[in-house]
Amino acid sequence: MPPPPPSTSPQLSPPGEPPLTARQAERRRRILRAATALAVRGGYEAVQMREVAEGAQVALGTLYRYFPSKVHLLVAVMLEQLQGLQEHIRRHPPTDREPAPRVADALTRAFHALQREPLLAEAMVRALSFADRSVGAEVDQVSTATGQLILDAIGQSGPPTESQRAAVRVIEHTWHSALVAWLSGRASIAEVRADLHTAARLLALP
Image (cartoon, rainbow, N blue to C red; front, top):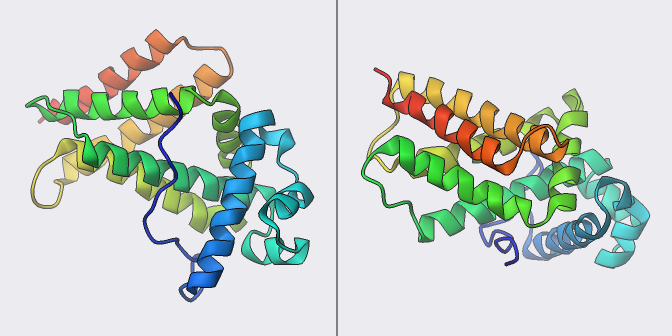
């Protein structure tokens, strides 16, 4: 089963930049599709900016105006994948009555979606690990999307409490660390699943 399709939500412009026109948004989508295809086939090293430009049918200079580096580009791919997962889970929400099992279910499904394309997952996680301050705003967008996926799974009306926000941050860190541990061969899928369920139980604490 392939991973969820890329998000169909409006394309985000770079932080601090004006909104993209329809033509610019379509060009950006082509760039992200080309980068994703290269990462699926060969991981982080396969994503070369010149090949991305050729695959997206844009000039190399145009590509660099959208994404100043490969890290910027793959962090944007990660954001798009998370948005797609978020939309999928919103269409097929967890059914448990309690928030902790719902969150564990949603994150486990998100993990399994990334697991189906391990080279793509490796490329995105490596980009996040390499990101420096110049990519800080884009990394913040990834963090916000991950947190929103967790909040959506909680399924409550109204804003989260401070304790829930703190739990969401810890769960988010656990999910990212579990991905890194699995990709490096230090954790099995069963261990990742157990860690996600353990972290989600923080939502049940007073």
